[in-house]
Image (cartoon, rainbow, N blue to C red; front, side, top):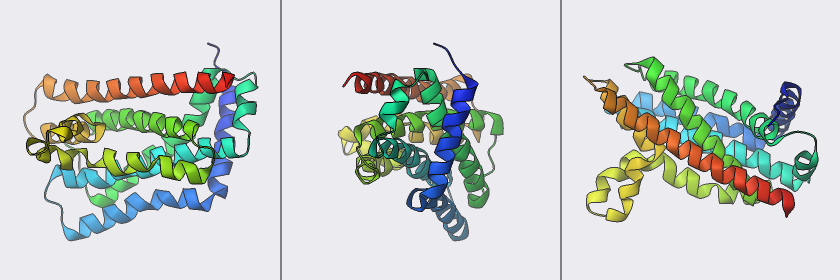
Amino acid sequence: MNISMTRIQAIFMKDYKEFSRNYAVSLMIFVPFVLAFFYNKTGISSISEYFLPINIGFSMVTAYVQCCLIAEEKEKNTLRNLMLSPASLGDILIGKSLFVFIMTMIVVGITIFLVGYNPANIFIIAIALMLSSVFYIALGTLCGLFAKSIMEGSIIILPVILIFPLGSYASPLSTVYPALKFMEWLPSSQLVLLAEALEGSYSATDVIIPIVTIIVWSIFAWIITAFIYKKRMVD
């Protein structure tokens, strides 16, 4: 699979322009900032509370914006042209993801600052946050491929926004409601578990399991996304 930096850059710039013109989508980046600010002012007593605005940022910024950018392409009938262009699958997926990835890292960084979180090991947390971003971009891309318009994409992405950020809060309920057991393994829950482990004396397993879990989620999500994308090419 050939990768062209020129094509990736062109797709990146196109997404940036589309994002900056669509205020309904671009204003979403302020949601985690507001939440982080108020959480900081009201007082935070646990790692899960620090990570709630961060995880909400992943769903309401990363996944939502990516979904809307893909859906907008479909609404304007430009995604089909992109699929039929000389750009490879890698060019398109990387190009369509790069802008949101960079934006996510900036948003997450500002959110961490506003919420007042000081990671015990910033290097490991940074890796986990980047991997989480890759996962949520895949989710957003997948949802966008099923949407025919931005409005439809905003509805399709709702389960991601409502479920994925709350993994660590739903986990304690799994003893009463076994159906919620799976939420312990959501990337949002694994982020919190990793951060909690890093605050004390931790073993390699405490770090490896959450990181590997997020990687597995990401790989699985991107495999499905690539499959759906290729299917859309021949539909």
